[in-house]
Length: 276
Image 1: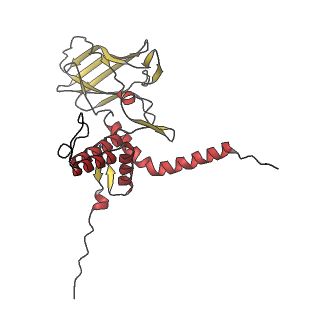
Image 2: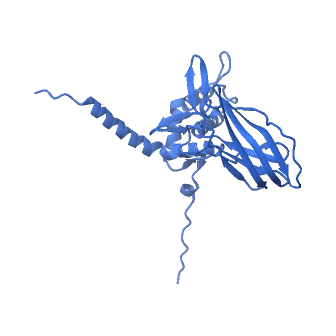
């Protein structure tokens, strides 16, 4: 009796085991890289002027958010107290406009946060020969009416229309693992820093140049250094170096670079003993 191998079951088992191994090997570093990039775009990371007396910070949700994060906008007064603010936040994309009315009172230098419940998240709607289309491509505050302390009302105005570049998806380094989308910018930046280190350490422009046009006339040690440099900065070799450095415990991933693990490298001072 012939028993056929359940290849689909074996494939699922291998996929499950591989997922566990890669999660154990990669997860903590992926989390640090993702948090590094998320911190640069979180609410309050950047403030923009809105007229003469206000400034705002905007955080639009996207599929890259690991938690359920609603779009939010924060406001604060710049120098004087603001009694009343009425405005509309408008977002548009792919031929559709969205508006949400916002009314605020008693603004000072403390931060006031408004949830943009009527605005969808940034989402890739289509990527085809026709082009790349997102749910939101433009944002603007319109019909802004601001009344400062003392009853002085600023003339109604519209903010400058902002066009979203969507660098978070188009230009960043993303990897999908364990059913999550991870930003790997910090990892890629660290690898680039490692390449720069090897090129400097082995004496590029002193003994050789990797990208000089034409043929070079190099002494034997220049040829040796150049070939060694090419090997060490190879994409696959630099990736191996990076993960060995991380898992050795001697280095950790910092803000786009490898940093010494202070806990691991801190010297343990010997205990003092007293002789009676």
